[in-house]
Each structure stands twice: as structure tokens, then as C-alpha cells.
Image (cartoon, rainbow, N blue to C red; front, side):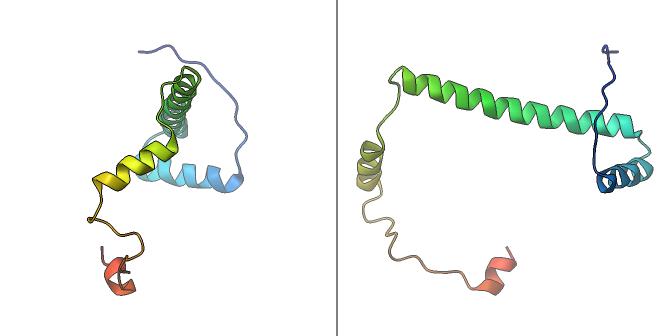
Length: 98
């Protein structure tokens, strides 16, 4: 079993009530559910932050393509395929059924 520690976190009463309900329904402890949620959140956020830092380092090192070059190349690739001025709206009923 992994080593654990205890932390104290202030949360809104409404969130605690939802956590209690989830614990009741899933037959899991509040502590287990909170640790799982916190673990997933931290993994996602840390990955995002690390990706941003990597992107900033790439920019600083000159490893990027300027926006106008990307737009020009994209225009060549999609010439005749996509006209941004001729987009057909999907009727609300069809969009809702997707």
C-alpha cells in the first residue's frame, strides 16, 4: 500500500453534501472519493501546465512557425475544400439530437 498523509481542506457545505451522497451510493468513504478526485485533477492540471511550459520553452528557443505562415499554408491545403464564408447552420432540432 502506498504511503499516505492527511490534509485538511475547506469546501462548501453543498460540495460536502454531494460527496456524502456519492459516498453513500457508491459505498466508498468520503476520504477515498476525495483522494481519487484530487488525484485525477492534479494529474490533468499538471499535464496541462507542463505542456504550456514546454510550449513556452519552444517559443523561447525559436521552435515555432509564425501564425501568418500557418494561415498561408493552411489556405493552400484547404483551397476549394472549405469556405469559411459559406457555412451552413445545422437546424436546432438536428443539433440537439447529435
